[in-house]
Image 1 (tube, rainbow, N blue to C red):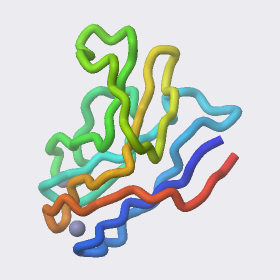
Image 2 (image 1 turned 135 degrees about the vertical axis):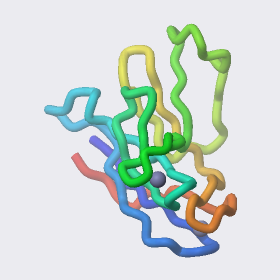
Image 3 (image 1 turned 180 degrees about the vertical axis):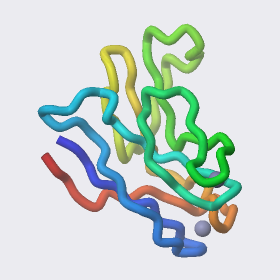
Length: 125
Ligand SMILES: [Zn+2]
Ligand SMILES: [Zn+2]
């Protein structure tokens, strides 16, 4: 079961790639991908959530995760009671790790405005 999401910027309408988020029957958690952006290149890419740091495949600068991960057993997570109001994606990555993408405006790396949203465009299983 998973969700297909599409990043949409209402300012520049950059054609960003879609992403499948979720776990299929045969998938291992490593395969769960989340959207990251590179402000330097103006691109969005989808990378494994379980790696803590990622670099842009083009410029090698560090990319930034959209949404957030939270868990009960992470010692560095001070936000245990994090409860987003509206959620587009909420998946369990591991036993104690949850990934949440909210229904709100995010940063668009192309036009640098806070006008990017993630839309659910379908389901897959
Ligand atoms: Zn934009
Ligand atoms: Zn880059």
